[in-house]
Image (cartoon, rainbow, N blue to C red):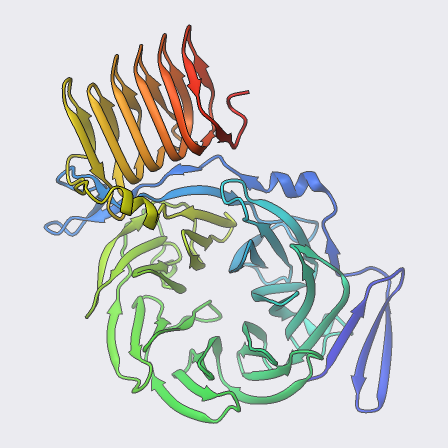
Length: 547
């Protein structure tokens, strides 16, 4: 396992070090290319399906899944789809699928590979500093390499994958790791370094302060590289490595032929966790630490949970199934992410499921209404990033309430009523969303104060003389089914926090909308102001709908 340093110029010189001997290759056309067309990057962001997401919840009696719940009660988890990032496409790489995502600070790094026997891939850097308006800031094409996983660390993207070594004189093996300069969301093609190792394909990568760890499958190895030079420092052979995780000076690796092995940073074996599951052939599966537990993607069984110290089995988190026309072989867990007690499972053709982590076990909740086959999931803070095969990356917002909002609304009761919320004439009502609520519709004839995070699938109507005040987050409709907020004559809509409408805002004669504390407004439709309608206060107009 040697290293190759690529210096891009008029003629690409490739230097392969072998003891004291160096061999140079001249390559007429680079197989690694930067996308320079800003329009292509801009048009990769798609808002067509953005908006409020359904959750298919399980009926405890029938065991079947349906939108909402049988009682018609307002649902928990007011999730929204912010945007999708379409997979890259280029000559020789028209069948790319999103394979992995890593989020670091204001950027998401997405890898793509090819589903057929050919090799082609890409990496996107997506600026998510304004999550409502993600931007593809840089894209790198690989015309003869699959990219299966990646991680950003201190100015570099470490990417791993596969190449047909026999067809490329610079490749020393099929399994590789690349160290790619990337600063402030922009790739550089100067100084890319490659390392190679035993195995048919590299499957996963992790880093520490001084080391880069890479797994490779099909008669592969766990390899440690020097982080600076990307030279191989040590390795352990293994039959079928799929993934690795590093935490508290321990390395957990998943081998599809036997289970999980835990090593120290010097590759001394600490513990084996035997697992007899069908991990499939050459399919993505992950292992991850979760405090005192280890979570393992075990294909059709779902997620296996084990004690990280003893290796003892704790539980299986099953796959929630509601797909139509999906081959059973595609209903497999590929990855799992945990965010504040919410367990998100990437289940291939069965989609993205949501579960709740309790003290002693994990409880099933529902299936998020996303399209596509979900290959990988990562979740940080208020967002979920799902690598969705041919649909690319899907960015979801969890719409968690802020602590300050909860403090201000502490005196309000959590809403437990019908998901078609109605306030009659003369009523003055106020509710907290608690951890967040999903509604089907809202109609206000009296006065209503809502605190927290709310999503509404259909229209919101404030009748004549009505008053609607909101603190927090209020999101209406989706771009697939645009809805509206209608403020009737002399009614008042008072907004503090974040208002998002996938559709129109209509203010009838004499109606008013009042913005408090520089509220943020995102409207995907039009703003219609009739005679004497008023817009009061300072606010941030994200999509310039009021212009």
